[in-house]
Length: 99
Picture 1 (cartoon, one colour):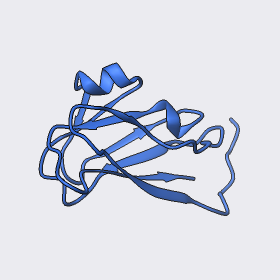
Picture 2 (cartoon, helix red, strand yellow):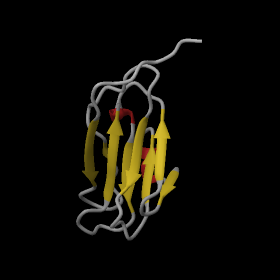
Picture 3 (cartoon, helix red, strand yellow):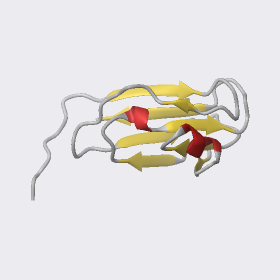
Picture 4 (cartoon, rainbow, N blue to C red):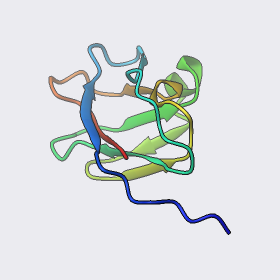
């Protein structure tokens, strides 16, 4: 079994959705081989955050997160994830971490 070494850095950020009902793509952030990205719905979220692998999937509410809910995914780039919200308040969105 291959053992992955510890990472010397961590990329963090946030993404807010401008308009409820119109999904937006996460930024171009490479995820190292064997590691997962972590998506957390912002603490102040009052509605739902929807996640999908395409714009259409996010807009059809494929995966739903509430405030502080966490989603982990193994992928090669964070931009493979799209998010949407059901309430258009300022600040509705997610925080992300990539090792």
